[in-house]
Every structure is written in structure tokens, then in C-alpha cells.
Amino acid sequence: MATSKSQKKWRDKHRFVKKQLNVMSRRLIHSYLDEIAEEYKLRGKGEAVAFCCFVTKALIQRAGFNEETARILDVFQHTYNQDRDIYSA
Image (cartoon, rainbow, N blue to C red; front, side, top):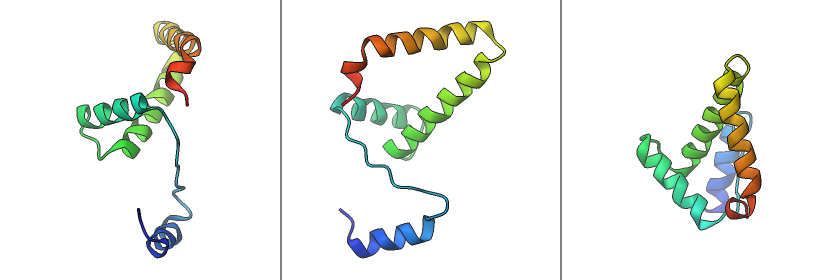
């Protein structure tokens, strides 16, 4: 765990562009993030979260003009909502 001094230094340096996100999640999600980071040569779970957000946003934008992407996104949304308890904390 980082010291209070180093945390303050990080926050002061990045206060306009970054915000720390501490999320409690199931071990399964941590495992998925490790897999994603390794598969796509990312720098860890934090970057894997950013990558997942990037991919989701890209799918949403693509679904605006591609019917098949919109259908797939709807399937993902429906399936996640059905199995939400497996993934959420």
C-alpha cells in the first residue's frame, strides 16, 4: 500500500486528468481483468478496465449505424442483466 505522502503526490500531479477508482469486485472479475491485460498486452488490471470501457463505447457507437452490432450489444446487455449476480459484487 502506498504511503499517504506518495498518494497525495500522485493526486496533486494528476488531479485534472485522473481520478482513483477503488472497486470491490468478485475474484472472477479480477481474474478476467488479468486475462484481458495479458491477452491484449496491457499494463495491468487498471488498463484492462480502461480497455473494456473503450471497447464498450466503440460497440455503442458502431451499433448506431450497424444493425448486427446493435443486435449483439442487445444480447450482451440482456445476458449480463440475467446473470448480474455472478458478475457484480
